[in-house]
Length: 341
Image (cartoon, rainbow, N blue to C red; front, top):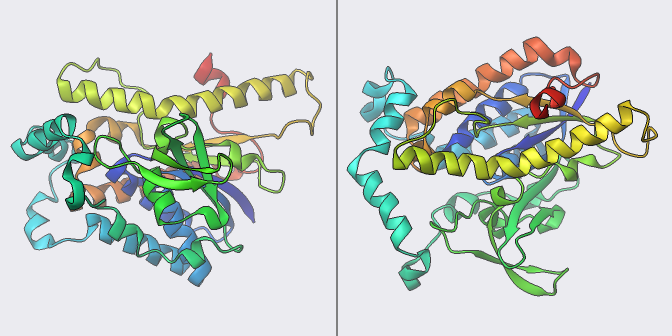
């Protein structure tokens, strides 16, 4: 049995790619997920995966993920969307990005605070998250789950785990401040109620919770924010989208750079084996597809795009397993020296 940890990035509706990744991993009876760290959509996917695993093993995890993404919009009246099936996601993204409703909504979110709605405000994700069974999510059995959010006051990351994982913790992890009011949760360390925003600002996702000695060495990062874009963004939409990607990848880069530094010290004999954990880094991604999408497809869950993202996640995972499954438990398949050289 190959035991792995999963690090699931946030990225709005693009988290449907991770849905496909997890769906494909569930086909592998000899791979066990020991722990999951997730932010935003990654936290939603992680919670659904764990809840289903606790309830009914692999079949339960698959059903729980399908239910989550049905609630997120992947299942609509497909009779109205069938004509779009032959259209590439990039074309749908372009049409959505420059549509009048999206442009008006985007401008509105920059001009009007989510606090302006008063008693009429309601977080639209709340009804989705409330459907989770938190007895299963917080259970001792199944993969360990870590949910990342950003403390507004201190600017530091908070990682929720065990009984701390709740509807509010997951909503906090996915709280974009220009769209949602900050989520308030009591923090026993500070002794006060703190406000939280999206975890992507400080950990997308945080990797350090996976470095416990009883967890496996392998960390499989499911990356849904492109690390690189060859073309310089020029339109307002492209500029804002790339700013979002860079800011939400920066915390991941910092942790990977630290891992690279420690691994180099171990290789040079400057640290004794056992003083620091060995970390084997792997990544599942489809940067070509994500480069064709945009902030519009992140914020508006189009059923056709969601299903295409799921298919892409399954395909990317199939390629990863075909090329690298034998390396799990043996060596990294991401070259950190090359990444930071």
